[in-house]
Amino acid sequence: MLQLNLPAYDFRVKKMSDKLVIFDSQRKKYVALNPEEWVRQHFIRFLIEEKGYPAARLAIEKQLEMNGMKKRCDAILYNEWAAPLLIIELKAPHIPISQATFDQVAVYNAKLKVDFFMISNGLEHYCCKVNVENSRYDYFNEIPTYNQLLETVERI
Image 1 (cartoon, rainbow, N blue to C red):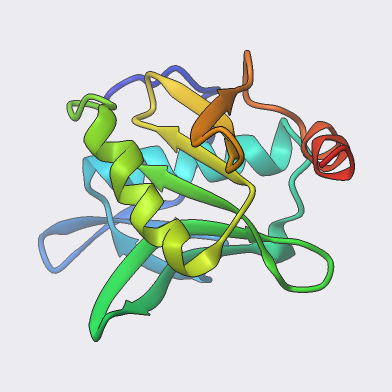
Image 2: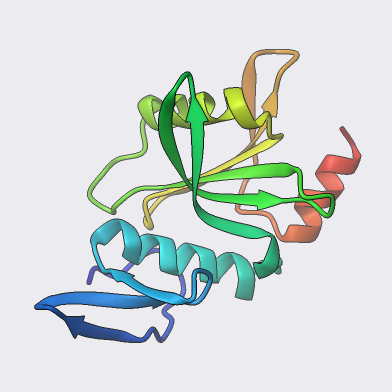
């Protein structure tokens, strides 16, 4: 798999039915190993191990129903009261982060009404606060630690 702009981690990868699978420690099962999953496994582990995000508050591939249609968020971080706080959207490395990616997250946010987005393709990473008053996103210089994110929430 491609080298990402994230720390290297050891993963349990094996072949099942002629396909590679990777163990997802959040979902506690093996899942198909494709380029987006490679990014997801690295990015989630990065958030937990390097940035201090609580694993128990991260939901992976959370299904949402919107206008009778089923959508899937790559990950959602919940606060201590189990309310959504952050939407995480992940793409395969060969997919550039574009306005369409932010629009996709904005659609999810119509339902979830979170304060923050994180978007990554494993090479580029973005974190922003949703600025509802000015209809824009305020970007962080880098992916914040969990405590930095909470400090930002407290200033809202």
